[in-house]
Every structure is written in C-alpha cells, then in structure tokens.
Length: 149
Image (cartoon, rainbow, N blue to C red):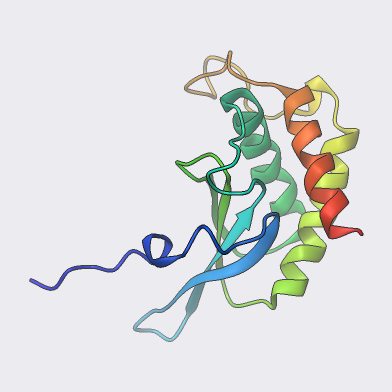
C-alpha cells in the first residue's frame, strides 16, 4: 500500500510568514470538478496559537460569513495546531480573490455582537460554553492589519 502524503506535513513551517492565504491542495474528481483547499494562516507557526475560545468563535463566524460572500464552500475548519483554518471549496479561485473575501469577513467579525455568533446553544454546538468574541475580534484585527498595510 502506498503511503499517503499529507500536504501540510511537507510545508516548512519555519519559512512561512503569517498571516497569509495559500493554496494547500487541489483534487480533481472523476467527473472533472475541482476541489481546492486554502490555508488561511492567522498566526505564525510555532510562535503563537489562537486560544480555543477565540478559535471556536472565529470558526462559527467564518463558517457563516464566508458562505455569505462566496459560493461552493464545502467546509472551513480550524487547524489542529490552532494557527489558522482550512477553507475547502468547489472550484478554484486566485489567492487574491480569497484574500478579498477574507478581508470582508474579518471586517464583519469586528462589527459582530455577541448575539451575532451563530450556533452557540447546547443543542447546536458540542462545546457551546467555549467562545470568546473579544478574542476572535483581536485576532481578526491582527490579520486585517497585515492584509491592509
């Protein structure tokens, strides 16, 4: 059996400069559809992590707001290392297009109120108590500053 190569394990994490957006993988289905994975890196690897409450709130807000701005989203999920998110989308976009949407979404996050965070009840969320809008907004500010310089 051939070993499967995990793209993120091949990335030299010492050579990246977060925050950034990069294409992290592409699959073409047997029907010819493209499924593109993007690395939305918020924090410099091995130098910082997003605390779980902030990461969790960012996940909920990104999941909603990115879908408001972009079609064909399969998923947006936090990285296990807590330095960013993977965005998986049907169809390929240029990095600049994804960055533009991310900037819009981060600006919406800065304006969000506690009641704007979707799916924060015991019924809708598996860890509904672990959220931090303040933390999510602080990380949104940091990423926005880099993208809008």
